[in-house]
Amino acid sequence: MESVLASAGVYGPEVVEQAHRHIAEDGQLLENYRYPVKAMLEMLDVIGQAAQARGVSYGEALFQSGWTAGSSYVRSSVGRVRAMVSTLSGMHRALEGIPNAAAQAVNFGEHSYRRVTPGSGELRFIQDLIGPAWNTGMVLASVKTAFALEQDQLKYEISVTDEDASSFLVRLDW
Image 1 (spheres, one colour):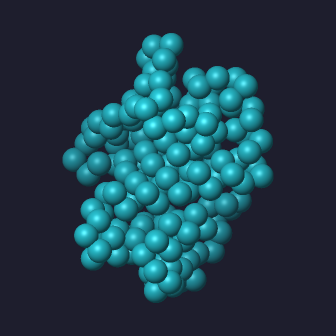
Image 2 (cartoon, helix red, strand yellow; image 1 turned 90 degrees about the horizontal axis):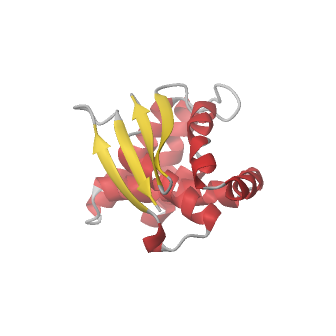
Image 3 (tube, helix red, strand yellow; image 1 turned 180 degrees about the vertical axis):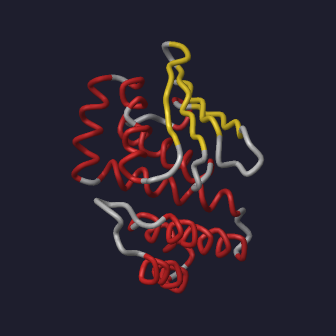
């Protein structure tokens, strides 16, 4: 949640304050580091609307918010340790850990990973209320940061598999 607030800062302190109010209203921790999904969705909506008011697409704003969350996580003390272990184990092992990390952070949706080729894999999100833009930004930033990859070293494709975009695939090629 803190990284979502940090990403709101791009649009000014008033947007951070507006987003922060949603934690104050709904934001009691459910367990560990889980916040109610309602607060997260409302915060992301504040960011998306602020972006649109400045000529940035809603989806791009959510992607950037996810990017901020992913890179912030890898730079945190826990994230640095996980990144170190992941990079020693290889890309597939790192990506296999994402569904577990999602299960720790949210209490909705199903998440899985499968190897497609030695240099590609696919993350599956089923009924993930946060959606493809934020999740893809988070995954790409955390992987690129952990593995110190350049822009062209990790390619991705998103395939939405239902009408409300809560189920989708993120294919990664490296």
